[in-house]
Length: 193
Image (cartoon, rainbow, N blue to C red; front, side):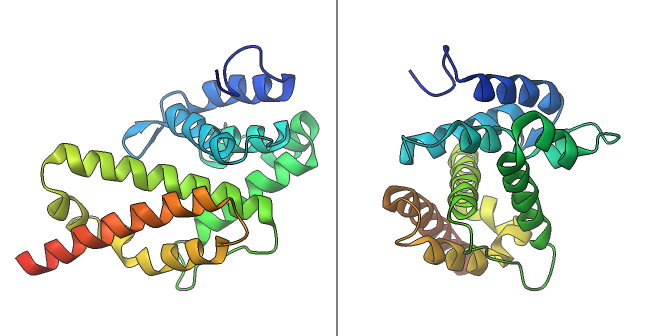
């Protein structure tokens, strides 16, 4: 049984219903966006079993800025429906995602919960990429073609290091393990080219 299994806290139930509606038709890492949202929520609870319903709801809704209807005032809606903390976490996580397109992406260390959510999001995304790379049969080639991600590996490594001693050790270790595997695949790719 997981936090997403019934019976759910009403806030988590509402967030799951909302995520299901908003994620319909969207993909993240070439998989249904709802699957990613649920995986991030599950990752949070695996490493933080006492996570509050607000944190689980934020995990489920963390990609809402990309998936929610364009005409929705998302910040106000999230605040009114889920509370200010959920809204702030979703908006701040989106700002982190947006900063990946800038020369110096931000690492938010001032909010431990945000750091934990972002680490969980990254761990899930990298694990998904690793799975797809293994399935492709050519890990080195798979990651060699992902130049945008590879250019950001140093940032993700710094992010993981910023969470050491702050986020649950098991979560930090999961992210580090994924980054190590991608580094190894890139080293193999470099020797081929």
